[in-house]
Length: 61
Image (cartoon, rainbow, N blue to C red):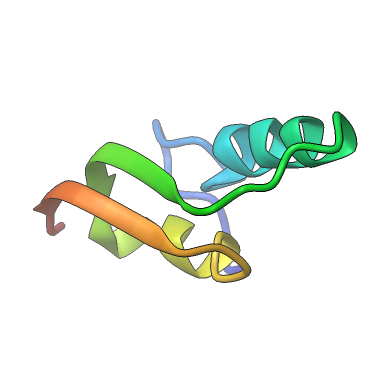
């Protein structure tokens, strides 16, 4: 991961990735993840590449 962008979170995709790990620890099967808005320039989708990801709206930088 590159240097942090001022005003933006350093760990992109981290909250959704942590939620997916918690769900998996409860013995549930994750079939995919959905995000309402993806900020495409931040690389969050790459952090979530272990799962199928549906993005409803993609915003570029």
